[in-house]
Amino acid sequence: MSNYDAIIVGAGHNGLVCATLLAKAGKRVLVLEANASEGGLGASREFHEGFQVPMAHGAASFSSTVLKDLNLAGEGLSFSDALPTVGLSEDGNHVSVVGDSVTGALEADAAAYPAYRAKLKRYAKVLKSIWESTLPRLGAGGLAESLVYAKGALNVRMLGRDDMGEFVRVLTLPMRDLIDEVFEDPKLQGLLSWDGVIGNKMAPRSPNNAVLPLLLRMNGLHDGDHCVPNGGMNALNEALLSAAKKAGVTIRFDAPVAKFIIEGDENGQRATGVELASGEALEASTIVSSADPKTTFMKLVGTRHLDIQFTNRINRLRADGMVAKYHAALSELPKINGLDDLGGRLLIAPTFDAIEFAYDDAKYGEASEHPVMEITFPSLQDPSLAPDGKHVMSVNVMYAPYKEKSGWSDAARSAFLGRVVETLEKYIPGISSLVIAQELLTPADLEAEYHAYGGHWHHGELSLEQALMMRPTYYAAQYNTPIPGVYLCGAGAHPGGGMTGLPGRNAAREILK
Image (cartoon, rainbow, N blue to C red; front, side):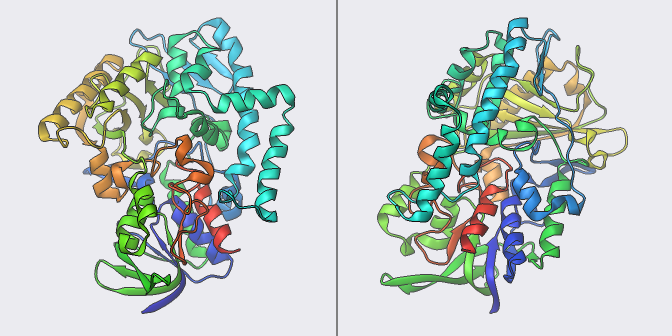
């Protein structure tokens, strides 16, 4: 057996963040990645000869604290200015949002937007210390735990009495209520809903609660406005990998972990290493999983090492993905009536009801009849993704249920692909004639290729019962787990999904205590 202080399972962004911080603290760290490259669900993939596409669309949610802790600027990483988010309209009268500016919407709504955004920025700032802390276990009452809550409470109190009440109220609102009480323009309403529901089994009316994901995103770069690393999304993965190697981390690719080695019995167990799919055993006193909680506990740890109540809680975690990925190799960049700049992100989510009706289908195991989607052209930021003069288009499509009622039969897959292309054609006329090659990845495909249960972006719903000191569930919400020596550092841990890097950072800090 090779001996390490810590083994990190998974070379996604959280795994690499955690590994780098542990190594910088003097630990001997090994990262094991099942795939051939780093990045996890944020990696790039070649889907047609000469055409690659990054799985992640942007880095708006990435934590500035993580950037500083890892000195990623020293690895040459920098980011674009805030890029517009454009709500496409079939008639070419699009609505666009960037910074405090809104164009294409009702004048009153455009005038109201800066104050609305300023309020949410204040609330995101209040939560910053919560996102960046290990939240105490329910019932814990020590000094350290009390200080975490006291700091959070002080931040809330500093809002002032009126704003403090508004803060608490906003945290309980569905996205539709939050937006509808300020804005009347249907196109703007649909656009502003998007960042609260993307990746989750939620819609604007869902009560369970889309505001927290939005505020987590706003804790990132440009207050949550869309942005990408200069040079494209691959630049972020490359910087994280470089920082890890400079810190002394050993990284092995094509090294899937079959199970954790747990020694002892019901009177005392501890993780002592991992066994690879090849049968090779590797020893470490600390095993850190950036895999989702269901995969970590049900597969890698194994139910025989867990009590039945904890196993039941893990089984009941809501982690069925709802987003499909559509990729297209294009002979040239499309032309969109009324829109000259395609460098931001484009949404087909024209109203609250359009999103809600798309979700209604998925609630009953059917892919949306009229899907809503987020579109980017990543070859504009990184020309190396496509041959000269050609481009790639990447589309996040909602809602595509993991448990599609036919099991994603060939007929169901083909029909949904047809509806995706038909919808794109309505808003980007002529786009289908530019397609050289295409692929559709359902949540089931994402699970198979990226080893994330349910193909869920966030490793579990970002809902109230799976958030904060309950993420992913109590007795596993402080990055440690019921098995001594096993820790979580992925998106299934606090504060959750999106490309923040915070679960990896927070887990490393907890391990080093």
